[in-house]
Amino acid sequence: MLTYTETTEGVRVTVQPVFLEERSNMIAGEFFFVYYVSIENRRGESVKLLRRHWHIHDEGGMDYEVEGEGVVGMQPLIAPGGLHTYNSFCVLKSFQGSMEGRYRMQLADGSTLDAVIPKFFLQARMN
Image (tube, rainbow, N blue to C red; front, side, top):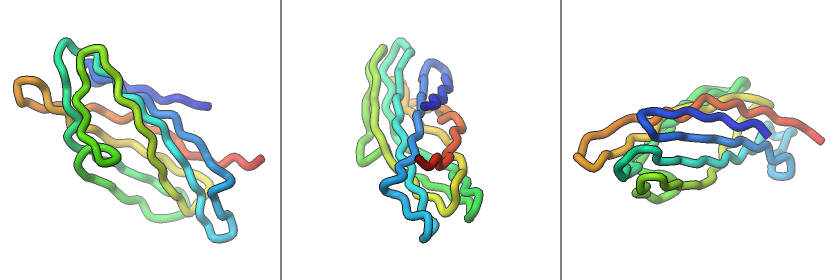
């Protein structure tokens, strides 16, 4: 399983994508991917995840963007040395694509930084 990691100003984002053949429907052109995300705070202060912004590329379909508050309904506060993990999913119309983006993080003084979500590749592998 491939892992993709990017660190921005002490916020480390790691993503692990997985193709779920049992949830996919190749005849209908639905390829189901789950991705596991870890956000590690390596700064000396807490950070709060305010927003997400994703760029999703589908080799066989249209590219699109997803933007919104928090992740899976939460805006976690991550303490120094802390870790927040979650998983989500994406359905493509083709065997492969990619995702990348950023998390808007709020620092203790109220300022923000955009933590990079590394570009990761989604590729259907049939068993």
